[in-house]
Length: 115
Picture 1 (tube, one colour):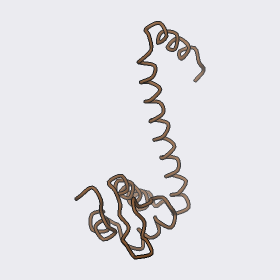
Picture 2: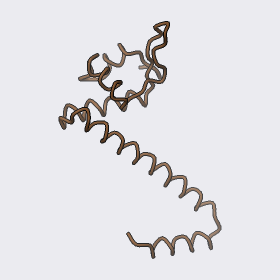
Picture 3: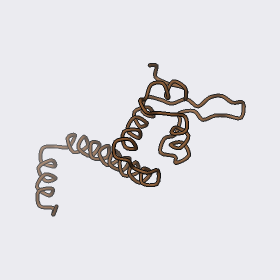
């Protein structure tokens, strides 16, 4: 599979993916193509992150029988978790760049904070 796929390639590559299901995911905006259909009928193009997301969406709808409304909430929570992980990683790198004394103060403050 290449870095980018058309709708037909996505449907062929992802088990359980159908055109109606893809349309439902697009309608719910739980997946957004890298390039959207334009007035001149240029096809939608999906990147690898879109494809991974659609695999997860199919797993959630098939394996857990999650309905479309709930799927929007679940994907929003997953997106928030990914953003929090990204932010925490950036914070860890920033702390790592500090002096040992500053890192020690931050570590002590972290251990004192309520969890």
